[in-house]
Image 1 (cartoon, rainbow, N blue to C red):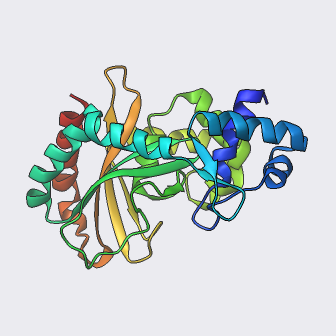
Image 2: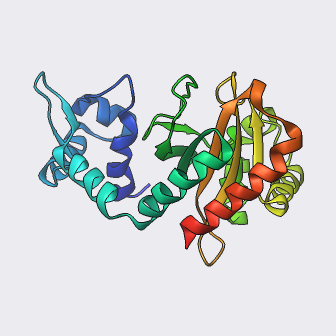
Length: 242
């Protein structure tokens, strides 16, 4: 792993339970010396991406908030997603979200959530597993083979447990079927009480930029209406991609 990858890896240490890291924790996690860990932290601190904590250690910096504001104000995908979800939420009678992915994670980046009685683990910005749920499957189905092979090599047991395939051939076949259908469906895979239908948001090169997801209570998912709802999601995802 090169120095830049190691330094960026510091951000993986921050999660819901850990908001501050120490130099020693960084050195241990990255398997590097304490002076090297300090140098990484100093570089990120100079860029405003992390900052000294009021009780010691380092937390995320103000630059992160600035970048989040830039995304909210200027990201074309978010702007289009907001318009599409505002229109579509009245047609599908459920809650909508747009998700993107990185590594093994899916992240909700926008929501239209009129029914607050439906609870979800997909808070905006919270990383969720790519290998479970409709959102992850919709994105997985459009990843290039080399990415999928890497995922298979590193996560074979998890892929099998998720019902995506016991080997590379089955994994590829499952995702090909999702890609051909144009949408994915899951029931209780992320939140036990919920079901999801997801359509991929694709670039002109058919690369997955994210997905548009309908979330409803699993008791309200009617298999007979899934194709009709999915068609609306596919059209909405197409409008978002432009």
